[in-house]
Length: 177
Image (cartoon, rainbow, N blue to C red; front, side, top):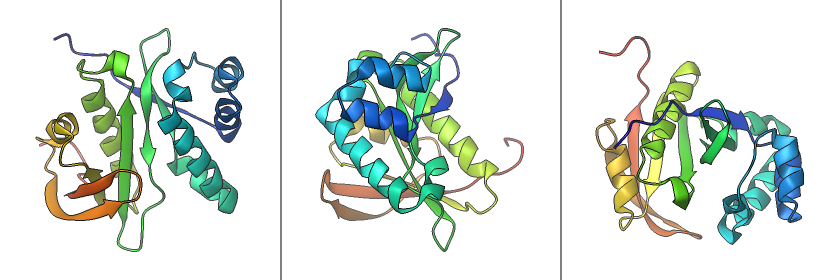
């Protein structure tokens, strides 16, 4: 397997999300300044855009924590999306979320996206813990977080996803060991 280029994040603004909800992929791509794919128009993605827009409408300061496009290469290839579910809570915990489009899976993009999310969390002085919640049946996501120090700390029920295992890792700051 070829190692992918580093993932960089590009904000998926409220305007782009609104265009996606209206079924305007070309308009959303123009606002985002990269070519989004049909994957951003799936029912699951549309649910996420609606949810994030409602969150940002209630608190505009949340936008910087929300959805980013996962982009690779000089041509701006959009392989998925990622972000935090919100700002750090009272103990400094942030929950990550990321998804790689089916056409780009099994190429290392999820791992690169996770690395970038952890890097961004470490860059925020108020973040002390990163959480990931994963369905016990999602073998690929469980494999993606392995090797990053995540420890299973419990489980929860999610209205959309059902049963999820809860994993956390302390933020690592400074040069790698």
